[in-house]
Image (cartoon, rainbow, N blue to C red; front, side, top):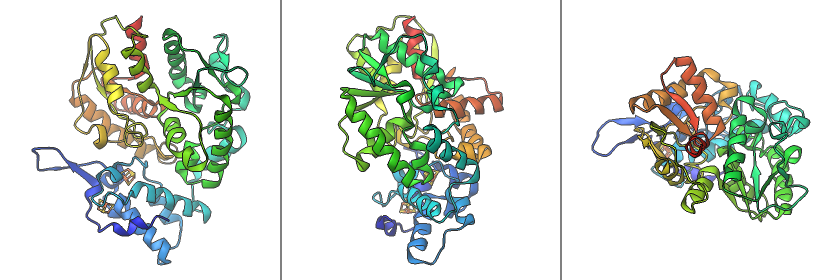
Length: 386
Ligand code: SF4
Ligand code: SF4
């Protein structure tokens, strides 16, 4: 385990942030805000890890209950006064200890892990279901012919019908930009973000090595991802497991490039006020804050209104790290805080760039009966082209 946990003096800076000119502290940690015990905060997780390391604590069901009620949103690491401590990474390491001792992941999430092992996706779908959304589109099979750009679709956009539009939109945009691209269809495997975040280190590492070998062999110049989780794992975690020979770019970055080069020309006035939700795995994990905003600002008739907690200080959507599966009421509670913040901006639409964020934010809007749309960045760009 990471010895940097010993740099934590329990200052609690990881739980909140202050806005310039204001004196009140606004929470950034969903787990601490909901459960109000320091054990749930990033710093508390550092102390749990110390207890495990020193033998003062043993992994057990109570510890798992606390450690898994966390979206690994990384807001604590961003705020941490000790900075080097990376409490969210320490929390992930504690999950690995819990899994090794048989206390993790939580029961509802175990099916996800088994499905990744059996079907190469977390959704229990047989492998032959992969790529159904692309039937009849005549897309190049990147496992059979060399392409300049691989579109790595991801399990959620591929296999969850309500999120298929991420894949369909991305393909339309790649085509509109005149890109030489292909997909892997049945030969695409889960990126492993789910098992990585649940603490199933062995399952993840096997998957990561297999994926890196496959992706390296394609010799594509770059890989485009439309899922923040896939992007985070392919770009930042795989290189810690194996030598990668590919370059990864997220859809917001790709769209920004295409708009800058004039390969996509939005013309239709949308007449919308929008607010942008930073997905944790693009923002805090990937540092991708400007590209989606530049894309929105390039669309005619789109007015961007920022939420109070934005960019590095964004409040998580609530879906990540198994929370949506294991603690759905907590996921909705987190989502509700975000939707309320979006409503305060007066925006017509809450825009994001991740199928997971869109899923939980849409469920939350429906549960609240809130008067705001939820869309992906690709939805808006496509609408402005049509
Ligand atoms: S990762 Fe997010 S939810 Fe988990 S402790 Fe840190 S700030 Fe809180
Ligand atoms: S994790 Fe960082 S911010 Fe949180 S209590 Fe410890 S030192 Fe302070």
